Image 1: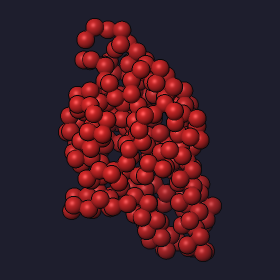
Image 2: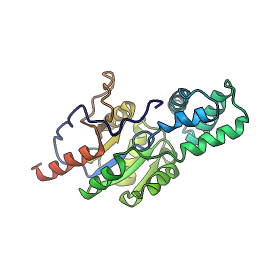
Image 3: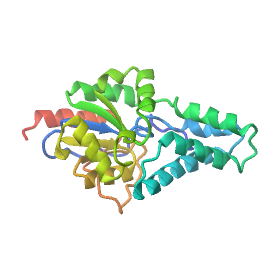
Length: 247
């Protein structure tokens, strides 16, 4: 996350072919999948904290949320994020700690979208497949991101684990999304940049698409995704091709 965004770099790999029928529903993760968190490193630097702390902070929020989920809790993402910031910044030469935390939380709620998102979402919507978001964060964060980029009208629902039994990657989280959207797992495709999210969705029976913008190596200890693409435009191309092909 602390590295400059590489959205505009040429793709180093080809999309995997889509086997089987085209999904009826695309479920998008939000943080880092649709939103570009690279700027958070600069926001940490603005308050006098080392830029690398941004990635460590976000990873710690996920870690702590997962740990609480395993023990039966469903914590509020913003509460964990704020508490994590306070703890991380307490060890740094940051003045006015509460103001610094507020500043970073505001920055997190105002992140830009990745460069492929606006056009890619429009292309995906044009295929006729239903689109929803599903985040471990609040639906309000997703709503703000989509509205700022003029693509909120493409999504029929903005889902959050706040209304589910547990955080992703718990199976009950994905089942909640399927129930709300009234689709079977085999008719839904989760799109995410996080292998842990794809692994959880796969275990819950969903088809999965790894959005690999930077050509990273997929961890071999997680279930392989069904599809790997370098951009949302590539995913739209696959769905269009699947529509034209016989089931």
